[in-house]
Length: 576
Image 1 (cartoon, one colour):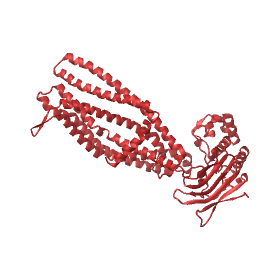
Image 2 (spheres, helix red, strand yellow):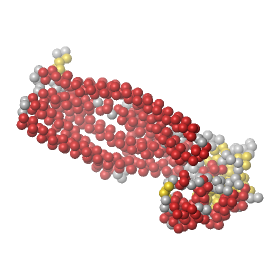
Image 3 (cartoon, helix red, strand yellow):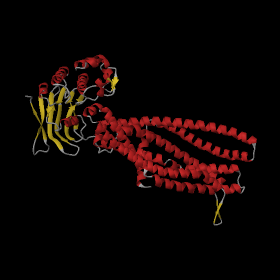
Image 4 (cartoon, helix red, strand yellow):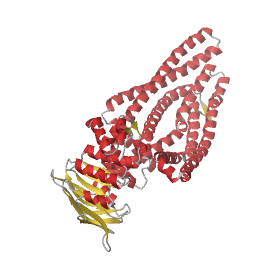
């Protein structure tokens, strides 16, 4: 077996095995056994239909009215059973599909959100594009395709075995070089399907790669549409519609170009498969006709032979009919295994970034021998140390681009390109306020209390904090669910961020230019409120306005250096 096929089967087993070894294995295993039993039942009913064909057409040829109506009654019973089994097989398969999807989705989401993997994936050189699509669409597609193709293949194998025996018994001998060859119809079906399968594979093989890229291009285009929707206001203020249209057109060009390639390849495959299927209708009659015209078999025998041939040929040609779905299935498996491999790689590198240690409760934060690097390896800061006592307030200043925000990412455990050691008391809450706080699509109360539940604080307390932070006009909307990051101005969002900080009352608060959209008077009022309400909270603020120094006891500056290991050094001084 070629290496690529071995890898695919290995990847398929890696994706499939965890569920069937999980706590769901007993219930889902029983469900699968029932579904498989129904699949075998359908094959058995098809065998009975095949026998019915012989008797029914013989009754027509013999003009046997009693047998004709008796066989119609038998057909009604068989058809009713077939319909019942087919309906419940689909229903139970969908039940198994949603159970499996729920389990696998929860597993992937948990792994994606664990240890900031969702953030760290951005540094994986684009090998895991659109994780949202992989979780929401690829998992569903993988499970649906796996069940459909596996059960379809099982039915084909069992049906092939059953109808091969029937076809062998119905076939007469053919003579080659005066040697009788039994089972002529079976050999004809094998030859016909074998040639068709080989040609289908040769024609359709490029669809695997094309389907893989189609999913990527569609996801990229959809992601950029969402970006326009979420950034509608700044795009409108910039007048960037033309640029966005060009960008979206460029993304959609990839969708269209790849789709044309799929269309052309599928057209070639359809030319062949349609011709192959139509020829398969008449082919068994041509092969069996000499025995019918010679009187060796009756009309019923001819029809039963043609039906059995059709089943054998269809089962042998299962690969032909399923080729397009197989191509999409392999592309889906490749995307999911690539995503899983990236997450596992992040797990293996979990210790990247600052070494973190637990300091005794009540002690301060100690950062030592910090080096910050860019993803490309260039250093920003080297050999920096910093200490902060509980309740102390420190302002971090420096020119734009020197690494202040990157310092916060390293302190928050997000930046993998940092080395050094950070000791903080275990179990003490740290909260980071960026320039634009994260506001979930939820009720306003849930947005203010995030990531805690609003019930932890109560609406009255949340409303009081909002009013104190200059947002009294929002206090009557606490139970209103909206996309608040699009409803509120940046200044309102920053006020809401301070309301979050006061409500959650963390032990350590890191503010990254959290008042940059506010005027100086509002900024000073919020900081004064913060200091008054959180006297025991240690605060580290990145800020450019000198007036904020009055709210901090110390200042640490990023200052340029020459000839060192990095272009900046972190130096401390008391505020002037």
